[in-house]
Length: 225
Image (cartoon, rainbow, N blue to C red):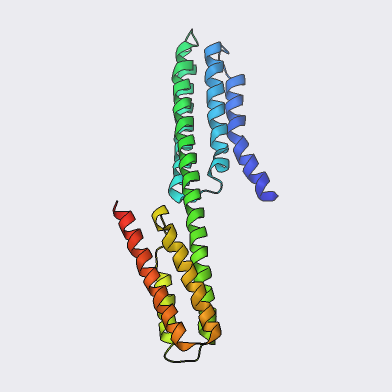
C-alpha cells in the first residue's frame, strides 16, 4: 500500500507543477493554449497508462519499445505544447494539426506494438501446448522405462526418449498425420512394456524411432519452403 501511494504521489508531481504554471502564471488562456494544455496532459496520461499496455508482454523488446515510445511522445508533445504556448498563435488550427498528427502517430505505433505482442503471446502459448503434448509422451515412456530391468531393452527405450527430446516442438499442418502416428506409436510401446514381451517391445521401439525420423523429415521440408 505504501509503495502504491509513493508511485501515485510521484506521478502527480508533473500534473501539479504543469497545472500551477498554466493557471497561475501569466499565460493567456486562449483556445490554442487550451489545446496545447490538453494534448500535453493527455500525453502524460498515456505515459502513465503504458504499464497497462505492457502488462503480460512476452517480449522485453516489445515492452521496452512501448515505454520508449511513450516517453519520447510525452517529451516531444510537452516541448511542442510549450513552444505553442510561448508563441501564442491566434488560431487553434496549427497547434491542433501538429499535436493531432503526433498523437495519431503515437497511438497507431502503440497499437501495432500491442498487436505484435498479442501475436507473440499466441505463438508462445501454441509452442507451450505443443511442448506439453510432447512432454506427456516423454513422461509416459520414462515412467515405463524405470520399471524395465532388462539391460538389453533399457538402452533402446532411452534412445526413444532421447529422440523425443530432440524432436522439434514446431509443427505444421503437413505433419499432422506424422504427429498422430508418433503419438499412437508411443502409446503402443507403453502397452508392450506393460505386457513385458521383449520381442514386441523392440519392434515397437523401432517403430517409434521410425515415426520420429519421418516427422523430423516432414518438418524439415516444411521449414525449407
